[in-house]
Image (cartoon, rainbow, N blue to C red):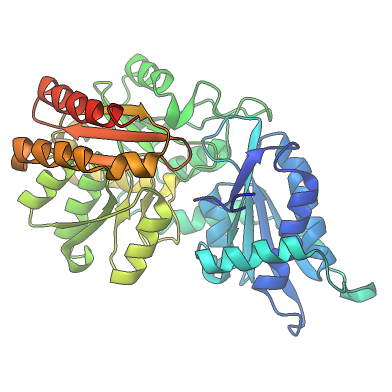
Length: 444
């Protein structure tokens, strides 16, 4: 059996891989690891996205928590970053979010936030996993059993938190927001309207079955069509748990996480808020981001793929902005994890402050053509490290020079080696990628 925790919690097909029994065990193990029985009363915040299986898993997680004497503060359907924030706001011991983010509806997941709303490190996850395998210990009885309380002011608290980040009213902006029929369906339109924007909400009617179904940050065509049809200033797309934000400008062009980071980095640099004049991004960020920020005198520090690695680097270097091309944007001064609704507010606030169209703000970044080829192999580690492949990569790097780059990366879940090449034109990128891919194919 592989490691229980993946890069973002525990995920699987709900009621098949992620069962009620496993959810109960995770709740109980988290209670034992993240809180002390010596405390007079222990509390965990529990939230979920609206997918149907969330009701089942929420009940199981809460059963696990309360069986260990931890009170469950149930906040209902809210974005993942709201649960992280409320863990702090309610002075809870830890938080649990039940969501599979951008995954299709049959999937679900359990994310756990430690004290202070922070994501768990590998060592803590391993200890929880060990406790899951060990089974239950001696459980409390009578008054020692945990209780369940519904937090009626959870959404209001989260919206107030978001409102504090908005420095410019958005009265002249019309925004279409695609809520992915997910956790943002109430929170995002409410936050944007409270900031003064004229909001047109689409895919904001979750029924438990339609989350991420042809909508949201992984399916941008409905948002593009709505922006153009309404003549809106921009569109914002969230994923199922609203920790991501991508945008569409008034022309219908996609504004990805890289472009959003460029806009926010330049704004924070101007305000003297970009710590160490540095942005943290992953190796998947387009070279165009690096070139745009280099010309502004901003350093880019790169990490492995996954927002947890961005978070680790942000904490280690005490930096103030980081994120991913996929739309996870993290600002430690405002939250402990990616917050798509907050990102949307800050993007619109910058538009209002500068009285600029989104296309104007993103113009410093010119996205270089990117070609990705997946090569099936018998052993991804051996194939990626073969001398002939390394030679092909070195030759490609020499050919591209400072005007392009190549990234060779074994897949995290499949026997594939991914070849990603960026260059000033697509033909060059494709030719280089094909040559390197062929060197890998020869190793099969």
